[in-house]
Image 1: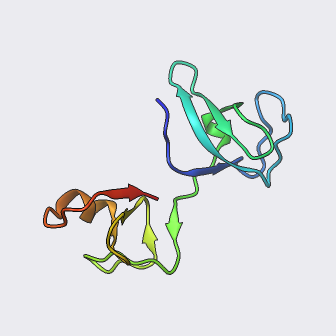
Image 2: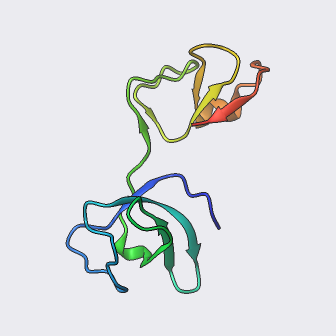
Amino acid sequence: SSGINAEWPLRPGTTPKYKWGSVSHQSVGIVSEVIASKQDVYVDFPEQKKWTGHISEMEKIPVSHLRTFCSQCNQCPLQGPLFRCTTCRNVDMCLSCFKTVRHHSHPFNRV
C-alpha cells in the first residue's frame, strides 16, 4: 500500500541488499510502497526516486511538529500526523483528537 507518512533513513551500519545508487546513510526518504511478499520497499529519497530496499534496512523517524500544539489536548510538540483547519487560524489537531472531536465543522488538511 502507499502513502506511508514517515521519514525513513537507512538503519545505521546496514549495507543495502540492493545497490546504493545515489542514496547514503545521510539520506532520508518517504516510503512510497511496501511489497509485502518480499518485505521490500520503494522509498522516494530526494537523491533518488523509487529506490528499492528491504524493510529491515530502514529506520522509521516519527513525524514531529516542533512548536505546534494540539488545540484540543495541548500535546506539544505534536507527534504524528497534524490536521490543520483550512478556515480557522491556529486550529491544529493531533490524530487522536481529529478522530474524536466532532464539534469543529470546517475542513482540515493533513500536514
